[in-house]
Image (cartoon, rainbow, N blue to C red; front, side, top):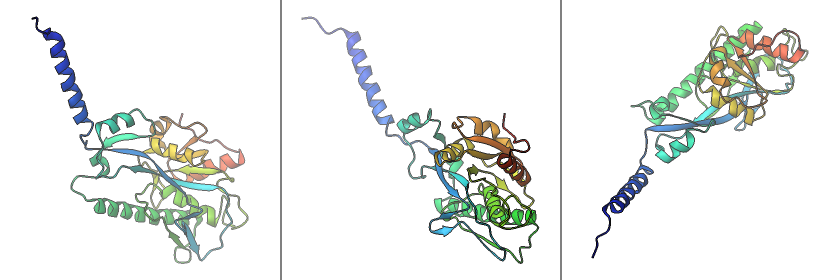
Length: 269
């Protein structure tokens, strides 16, 4: 009686082992997180039942259009992703697989990360208020600005906060509330960028995902820190115009040129 050929038997055993390893690997959790486009919020509007910007001590304008700050979201640290999830997300231009420590630093709890994000948001709001009032030559002793954006952290909304304050107080005019036109010309403008007291805008990261959030929510113009042009152009959604800026003055000049058709509008490329 003849025995079974050894080669098919060995191949069969190898196949079983490989399948077993793949089955185990599918459930192995990796030290990575998946980032994706988050919410956008109109700084001229209402979020979570409250106006994002409240101002007292100065006449306000009735604005139109939208000035949307944008965010990115990430899988929570307790949801470390599987190999399968990573492989599915890797080629997706609307997702980014990054080391978990890049979002949740080692040695910090989720509460500590959230507290740090909130502190950065508070500092960003203070800088935005200072930059806006300095630009309009208004005294912070007389004009009080409140900014409310629950459950959103980090410094990247600074530029859009500043533009929102200016639009509500003055639009694109020179200190005559009610007489000036909107910064947006009725359009949906989105953007990102940290701002300091002097109005300088710096990069914040994640713009390739933020542009997708902006386009999803109707934006046609996206203000981006100039240093992040290359990242913003990667997978840029159709119909979204990038406008690079390095300062508040850059952003205001570009928006005025877009509205009036007078003057050059900068481009990334």
